[in-house]
Structure formats: structure tokens, C-alpha cells
Length: 435
Image (tube, rainbow, N blue to C red; front, side, top):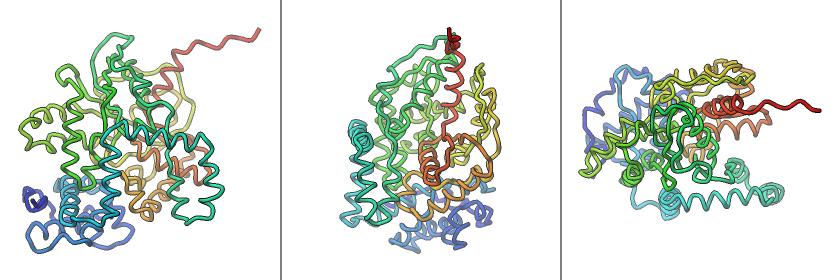
């Protein structure tokens, strides 16, 4: 099987090589090398599909140098489906390069298969990371081993996530009833990394949905959606994760499936394409894709109940790539922020320019990721904002770690968390006067 040769050839022919994508591509902007552009990469893909080029290690390296930010899709006047091409190209690179070097094969199996296959395994690792921090071992390591070790160790350890003490099933019941007039019944996706690091955002999402007349169904055993696998050339694994996630929900009984992670949402909406050749799941996948909504998208559809309490702060908004470019959702998160009284929402220069997180890109391409992060932080500094809002766990982590490294005291929060805070503040009892 060849992923590119078996792809509908019309998808490869869409590119007119006009160059409109070039100024929007972060890697081309940095190198000015044609092969580092969407147009150049599509030319390589087409050459492989035509049988004029083999998918060599150089081809694989180029596909993994691409962020997959999809800014080229927004800029393209021909409507090139770069999402599909990008995933097929990486899958082709992995297929053609098998068998891989033993160490790389083991690391990919451990990260993409073993770690994400069962949420229990991922949560166990999360507990170990939590213990590493809470036991004082992190402080000890930073003061001793990491201080004298290679600089790359310190850079990698600095990205250690702040794992929560409680995960989503401990914070959210399998089904919660809205305290106001019921309007909808929705399913809530808790994610994998999101569950470990931002389980509080999942709780916030549930609270906001409840406040807006939605009963919330949250299956406790749901696991990874497979987006990391699809984006990293493991298309077969991605299909398995998609099937398993679909099975966790009774689609006929819910009005929408809500996600608060932009990168996952972009993938979740493509389950119909991912499982189109599956005789048992193709129809279910179409039904699934029609129901998936980003939380900001859903709140805009059902008309949000404005909070009565205010948050007096200046906030700026960073567009996650897979929300603005992958899902074409830009106005809804800003409308959510505008609905909160007291917030002074200030524009962010290059708000749709990638922050360098891009799934695991900041791990496999740390140099380019760091350049993009510093560019983003410079623009954030110019806003004078006290809060940076963004709707993707990777972006939240990337920007948080960057601000911390600079020693800058700026909060980074999901827009839905700010909304949840305003709702809670309005319902809290007023403080009593001292006697």
C-alpha cells in the first residue's frame, strides 16, 4: 500500500503553485527554501505519487519539519486540502522507512502506542510526574543533575507539565443535570493530555455547559482520540482510537459532542474521512463528525447566557492553529471573551501565527519551535495583557513555559475557564462585613 499513490489524485492536483501560501508558512518564512514551503512539499508528494521520486529519509525529514499548522489552507485560493495531504505524506514516510532504527521504533511505540493506548497508563505516568514535583525531587534534580548535565536536558525538563492532582473522572460525574431550564444534552470529551494537565478546564467546560441549559454526559473511560497518531504517520492506529472513542457515546441521545482542545477538534471532525472505508463504522463516523463542536462554537450556536459578574483585566487572544486554520473558528472565542463584563480584550499581532507547540513539534524540532515561541512572546509583551487566552492544551503549555522562562507574570487561560470563573463569581454569596 502507498498512501500517496492510492490517494485521490485530484487532491494532489489542486495546488496551482501560485505561492499565496509562502508568506503564511512559518518554516518557509524562516529559511526561504522552497522545499520548506507548502508548495514545495506538495511538489515532493506529487513526485512520489507519480513514481518519479522515492519516499526517502530526506522526504520524511521534510514532512516532519512541517508544523502542520494549516495556515496555508487559510491562504490558499484553490482550496487545497493540505490536512489530508500532510497526514498521507507522513504516513507514506513512515511506511517507506520501515523498518526504522530500533531506538526510534521503540520510542514511537512507547509514546504513541503504549502511553496513549489506555488512559490508565497515561494517568499512571501523570501520577509519577505529579509525585516528581510534589516530593521535591524536581527541585533536587534541577539543583544537581540538571545543572551539570547537557543543556538539552534542562530544556526538555523545563517543559515538564504541571499535572493535576485530580483527573476528569474525579471532578465530573458521568452525567450531570443542568440547574436551569434544559435545552440540550451533550457529550463532553475529556481528552488524554487535556485530562492530565487541564482537568480543571474540563470541569470549567462542564460548568459552563450546565449554566447554559445543557445536561452533560462524560464517559469516565474515554481515551485518546488518535489525533497525535494521524498527525505522525500512524494512520492505522488513529483508526483504532477513533472507533473506540465513538463506542463510548450513544450518538442518538446527544445533541452535540463538545471538545475544548483545538488540535483534537480538528481531527475529531474528520472521523468521517478517517473511517470512510470501514463497513462497520463509516456511517457512525459521518454522524459523529456532524455532531462535534468546539466549546466556543457550540456556545455561539446556542447563544451564551452572559455572566453577571465581571473580571477586571486586560486579555489578549492567541488563535490555536487547528482552531482558526483547521476549523475556521475565529470569531466565536472572541465573542465568548467579549461576553464577560470587565474584560478589556486587546488584539495580538500575528495572533494566527503558530506558537511552535504543534503537537509534539516542540520535542522533535526544538530549535524552530523555540524561534516561533519567542516571536509569539514578543508580540504578547507588546499588548500589556495580564491574561493570554487560548483554546488548545499544547498552546497553553507552550506559552506558559515560555512566559515562565522569561520570568513574566502573565496568566495563560482557556477562554472557557474565564467564563466559568465569571459564572461562579456571580453565584458566590457576598462577603459578610466584619463585626
